[in-house]
Image: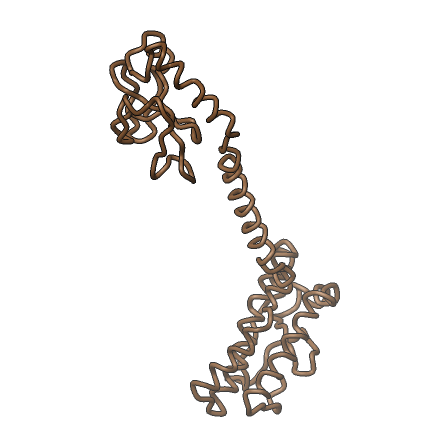
Length: 266
């Protein structure tokens, strides 16, 4: 419909595209009531045209064959009353996007744009939301940075929560001192740290070794860690029953630091 306007450079073709696009977007949004009225299904095949000056028009297709410029979708008025208005406008928007690209690259082919020119033109066009994006509201969607921020925040919170029990593990030194005080009594009573006590077997029958994971056995020597409050086979931590009467340093420890081990009768 405006065949006399022939942009020749990449910048001129982009300005042509942008003007036509703005006109079509206005027809399908701001001026949608007037556009709807003009697309009378009782009329002949109608097309929606956009012009470089940001105007739009509903009109019959060009009479010349073949036309000077690519033509937009034909007969958009026929489907107006047979579809939901939102779906019909989306259909017109999709066809309008295709028409805009065909016109832009028609000029590119006509005036000999090379590979870099075509790539640059497409990059400039692709920076703008499509008409379909405008009509459907997708161009108003917020960037996903907020979701990423919230996800990273929740991940950091989870890490903090999982680390809390580790911070609470260290016990007051009074407990170690209590065990040290109890050690001579255990030696005097003859109970020692032997693994064959009668009542202890029932109490610790479900206990697992913190090193190998095996169950407690009544005829086995076990030793407890004051720091992590876990039980270990003496053989797993390389401790003998004779050493259980005095405090023992285990390296590496079951917890984050060095764990002090005291032999107990189990």
